[in-house]
Figure 1 (cartoon, rainbow, N blue to C red):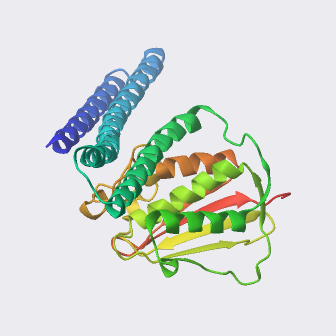
Figure 2 (tube, helix red, strand yellow):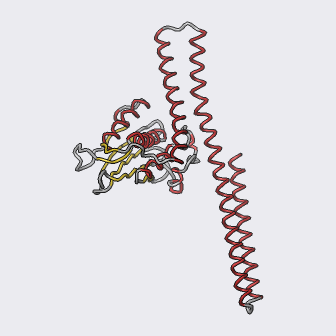
Figure 3 (cartoon, rainbow, N blue to C red):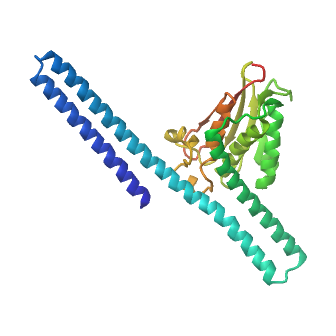
Length: 303
């Protein structure tokens, strides 16, 4: 209901803006037709009406953008609220059970494990929010150094397998021809690059559903670039949404995608880190239910 209301507001402002622009154009043309012999007044009138039209276009665009930003912000608040309340409620439930009941040692250890997992989930959500605020106002590469990017990616893959309890085949390394295990050097902040790679992997796992089959590969197409490609076979992304997914708070408004939990900040952080390191990130997809490939490009060390 709330989404429908916002769409009606956007449609209203679009129609209003178009009508006002059409009215201004009509008045402009009519004024020119009636006063075409008065050169100075004609020139001033054209400039005046052009300014009005430009102002109307800018005002309409600003209003529509603000409505969409508010929509993304509300979606973010709802997602973060859920991501914070769920692990807190779970931890509280386990603690109350341990406090009120006598449980055997095996079950006690199981409760401890589950509470630690919920605490990690809670910390991850907080870290995402803090990192998103940081990347908007600060230059990221604080401690740049030459590092083995392929080794960093493999390290992130191992952490993702452990955190999401995946089998090795679910998240597999795709060796590129010509590398033969050679180090691929990039110059950057290892913590920030680790955050970027981890967010890409987590996003691929999250939108793969129950059938996680993700290939990860690093290659050097030329002497200047290092390219990371993460391909999943999950829900896919419509063509019109491929650029929007890197915006702050944005999440694909589809039923299959909305079932995955998140804050809408992961890929926004990836894009900010890539730009801070002189690189870029983009996504490709053949459509819904046909998987997604996220590509991260970085400059090679010394390039």
